[in-house]
Length: 183
Image (cartoon, rainbow, N blue to C red; front, side):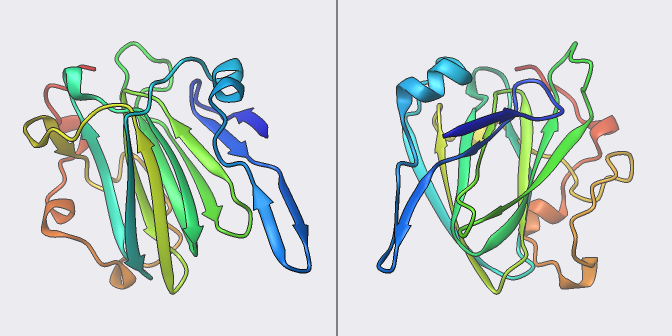
């Protein structure tokens, strides 16, 4: 596996090696020791999966306090633009984000540590999105940051009229108005 720390400290792009032939390919998508050697110790407790169609935007989601989650995300079908927004207090990159295209062809994974809001938009006709988390879902600690917050300057690579959002995601708060962002 190749591990590359991105422009925001703690966010890693991971590219598993693939072994292919005329029948397809084989890839080890998770190796705990190798992950720990590069990124550090994280105890993932749950795997999640979502399926979405083109234009579906999910995010920017976070859980606060003791319920904060680290995530290891990947696309097993399709293509998404994945965004991690740094909300860690005292971080020199607080309020900054990284955006990475993840595809099933490339097999890339993105590790997002605790203290980040996370979201993605589907760029292909359909996408199957999988992620590991290190903490349980806690709706009482959940918050959504507005995907279109002008202060964030996120280019989602599709026009707003193509986006399909849940009611929760349409009601995200501007980062400057967000309260209780302790991790």
